Length: 249
Image 1: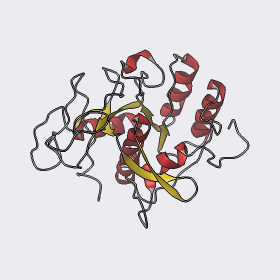
Image 2 (image 1 turned 90 degrees about the vertical axis):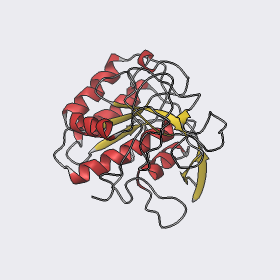
Image 3 (image 1 turned 135 degrees about the vertical axis):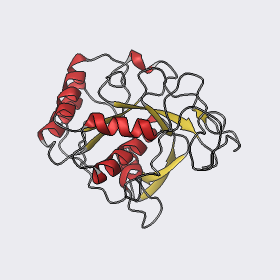
C-alpha cells in the first residue's frame, strides 16, 4: 500500500523486523526468531509518507487479520488523526494487536496519535548499558543505566517500556546497525506479543496487552535476581517488558 514495492530502501523497516524475528544464525537474534513477517511499506526511502498511505497499510492488515497476530508501527507523527485511530481500532476489533512507538520528543505521549490510542500498546524506550538489573552499569548517551531514555515520550498513555538505546539489529545491504529510539523499543514488545500469541492463539488484543503489562516489572531500581524491577522512570509507572515466563513455552 502506498508504494509499488515492499523492498526496504531506507533501512528502518529491516531494523525493526530484525528485533522482532531475526533467526539468530549470524549477527543478531530477534525476540521471536523465525516468526512470519509481513512487510507493508507505507513510507518512502527518506522515511516520509502521507497519512492516507499509512491508513491504507493498516486497512491491508485488517483485510488479512486472519493471518496477522500483531502489527508494529514504528513511526513518528506529531498529529492527532481520528482517521488513523479509526483504522487502528477497526484492525484491533478484527483481532490484531497493535504495538506503537511512543515517540522521541521527550514529551507526554498523550499529545499525539497513534501513541495516545487506548487500544494500542504504546512503548517507551529505556536505556540499558549492561543487560543487567540494578542500575549499576555505565551511563549511556541517553541517560543512566536502567532509566527512561531522555528522548523517550512518557505519560499515562504509555503502556510499557522496552530497551531502546544502542540496539544491535539487522540492516539493509546484508549489514547490521546499532540504533536508538522508541522505534527500536516497540519491536521488542511486538516480538513478545508474537510469542504470547504462539502460546495463546485465541487471545484477543486486549488480553495480550493485559498479559504483557501484568508480567512487566514496575518502576524500581531494585534488582531481585530474576530480571524484574530495574527500571527507573521519574515520569510514571509503566512496566518494563518481561518475557521470561513464556519465552520458551
